[in-house]
Amino acid sequence: MALTAATAVFGLRVGWQVATLTESDVISRAAQDYLSGGQGRSAVDCLAIPASQSAVWITVICTPRGQTPAIYHATRTGKIRLGTLQSAMPETLVPET
View 1 (cartoon, rainbow, N blue to C red):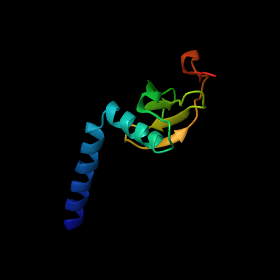
View 2 (tube, one colour; view 1 turned 45 degrees about the vertical axis):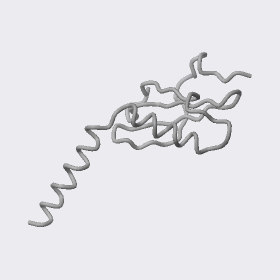
View 3 (cartoon, rainbow, N blue to C red; view 1 turned 120 degrees about the vertical axis):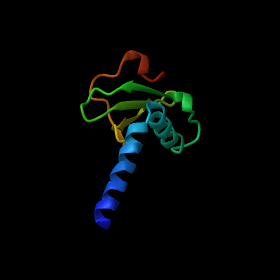
View 4 (tube, rainbow, N blue to C red; view 1 turned 180 degrees about the vertical axis):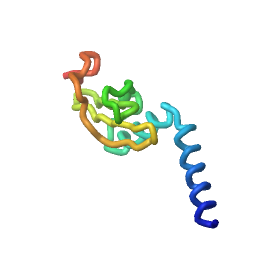
């Protein structure tokens, strides 16, 4: 009985976290990770686009001026990982030289 109750509470808690997760939450978490990577970085270096991969919800692209972009992929459950773009980068995202 206790195991069933604990499982139900855990399931409701995790379900609630996923149900209330917003795009802004994911973008903010990716930007925080990017900002922790060094000096000269700014949150305005980041933008988000809908993911082109089925297992990914949002792709966050953070491009420091004149450098290679950092690509973050986020799942619908909020897991964020570094990755690469699967297709060619739009010309508006190509770093300035």
